[in-house]
Image (cartoon, rainbow over all chains, first blue to last red; front, side, top):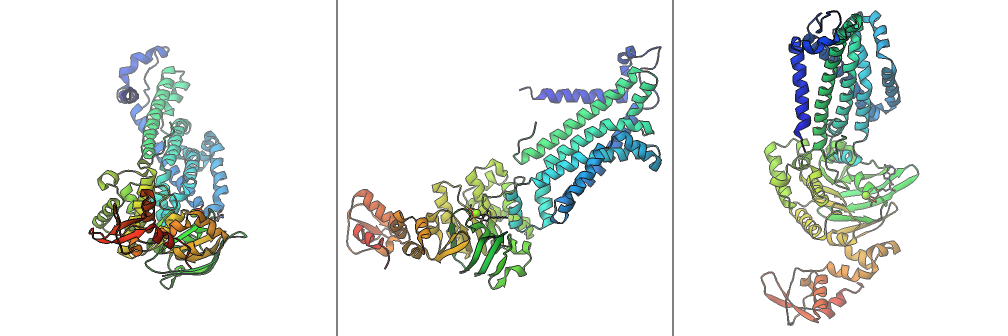
Length: 250
Length: 312
Ligand SMILES: Nc1ncnc2c1ncn2[C@@H]1O[C@H](COP(=O)(O)OP(=O)(O)OP(=O)(O)O)[C@@H](O)[C@H]1O
Ligand SMILES: [Mg+2]
């Protein structure tokens, strides 16, 4: 019933987001009431579009690195030769998660300087855990009978991994990636405290000049991006799960 | 020829397969029966080295199976795993094509083989080839599992309860198809089942296992006539032993001269079917015809009853 409604709403959000990023001036009357003493209602210290793209770029690089490392690690510790490293890698990745991103930034700046680098490090460490945990769950819960059938057909270890275990774990790995991306999108804003070009700049500028309109538009853009990316990844995940006759976790 | 010599598999202190020796002749069907947990699957899986024996040797056509790399060995041996084990993320056609594509067959040959096997198992290639396993019934999944094991035309086929989920009609059909394939390609088949009826029907030889040990290994008539111990006797089912014995023989071999009234029976039918028909229709004798309808003589209740008695 009304299957088109959610899709329609998403398209609206996307359209609004693009419109706002391309020509924010159009929305000035809406935000004007939030400003005081004739302060500007639209962020004027740089292009919102390029900030949003920089923000996405930072998240994308950190996530891709986290995927590569987390999935490789999960593969390694689920092979017979790597099982003994399972507890160690689990605790390492857990430390990555419990360490507050702000602290990572503070520690990284002296080592790598200001800018995008410390933010990338923080996001990378923070994004590892959900992907690693899910990849581990996926790779350790493939039905034994199916993996045995693959052995019985004469697949080598690599062939089993690439043709059976990874494809079967795909939906759950995607779920981990989705979680990681959404966390990173929000966390990336604090990167602006160490001079990384992200949408956090807009929010911080708003806080410094007591301009509510800035804070709101920075927050809304990040939120809209998160919602849209979350949805797109969920759809991808459902598609992968449906092919396997698994009931998607809605 | 498959030579199993003093093979033992231990998990901890328990020998789940205990000093089993047997020789399986080429181009025959050997059926392994036994209670649950008696080590049937384990014995089967040591042949293609999915399980490594603790001690003992298994030779395939004289070659110790430990001298061949595992994956290569397993590509040359068909294996229908207990409970089908289809790949849920691959279509029926892709599932069946597993071993041929590992062996690097070209696409045209694989497609032809997949279609051939689907048709053989009463599954329309156009309708079923592109489906995923979860879109099939349990019985259809099982047939696809058997088709996958047969795909690369292996000389040796290991089947672990392949027909468990089939209804009696499809099951009988699948058994006939298997025997037809076996005769056509001269495949050596080792099949595990819980069903003594199936064992007697399919097996050139039957191996009875109990608690990891091979209790008796003989032709069906021998198992029925001279069970090695009480366990085998119980497994055989004392109450319908005579009927199982009759099911081993064709009417052709029980024909007597003479004539009889009423509907005739073909000489291909089993003696059990003939006796059942006689008892059911209340006759003492019935005519027998060959496949072209020529009269060959008759079978009688008295004659069949004598054949159902324990062989001397
Ligand atoms: N990997 C294993 N580790 C420990 N014990 C095992 C293992 N595999 C099988 N066993 C034990 O070995 C015994 C024989 O198992 P097997 O699977 O060969 O039985 P089966 O005769 O095929 O039974 P079923 O008819 O139920 O399939 C069982 O008691 C089982 O619990
Ligand atoms: Mg078994």
